[in-house]
Amino acid sequence: MPITLPPITRRQFLKCSLAIGGTALMPSRAWAAADREWAGLDPNRVALLADTHISDDPNRAYPGTRWPGSPVREDEHEWVNMADCLAQSARSVIALNPRPAHLIINGDCALSSGTEGEYLELLRLVEPIRAAGITVHVTIGNHDTRENLWKLLPFLKKEQMGLQAGVIELPHANLVLLDSGKRGILGEEQLHWLSKQLDERADKPALILGHFNPYPNRGVRPINGMRDGAALLKLLAERKHARAYFYGHTHEWQHDQLGHLHLINQPAVSYYFGKGHAHGWLDMKLSKASADLELHCINPKHPQHGDRRRILFNNVETT
Image (tube, rainbow, N blue to C red):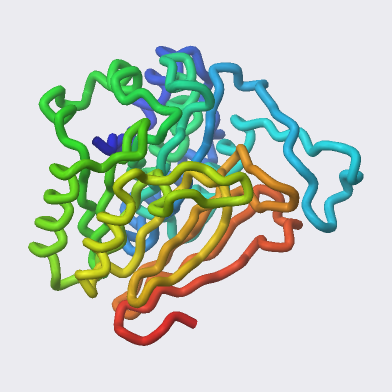
């Protein structure tokens, strides 16, 4: 199931940091600001991340590729540190005013296969987000192992482990989080659950999130998509209030539309494919009329930084 990490207090933050061998990453002035603003979180604002690919080594980096206008030469690589990318994203999210009430990491949190060491580092990196009052939700991707993450979260109820999806009910829209697992399969049971949840909540627009792309393959490096993606798209096409499906996996910022349904391919936070591709996260603002998306690139000089898209909640085409 998607895993929810609730906000933590200053005392819990310090205790947890010591327990997992981390350090307190927020200065005292930041704590004061966080304490003041907890009550001012915006329930109509959500930070959307995907493909953080965190290693158990915080110094782990890989050679990315240059983007147009980058100072890196054609024959050079721009080395990218995965932990630094998530830490930078966390600071950017916390700096938003008002802050989002929710942050979602849409799968592939881990770099390899979802080891406990990788999740210990992930939890350390998201602590400042939780300490800022933001609820963190995590879906499962093909590099993740749910059970290893669960072992590190004793406060979660064991009976929840059988659930494979969840709904976040917000004032202007419902967010439905799916679990496409390691192999990219939702399965009949989860598809039935999804149809039931959507039918019971037809009074509000629905935005659906899952890690795998719903197409057979997608991206600059063709990657196998969700095995029952056609069934998912058919289900969503039959429900006009299902306005968008957000996915990661292909590490590419893209926006398509099939009738009323928008397909939002989230960029990777830290591990990106292809020459010139953006990596970063999305700031989503919800209103009665629309979901407005803005791309925040890790490098603000990237040409796609600040790219904006709108998902209208009526039958009018997007702008």
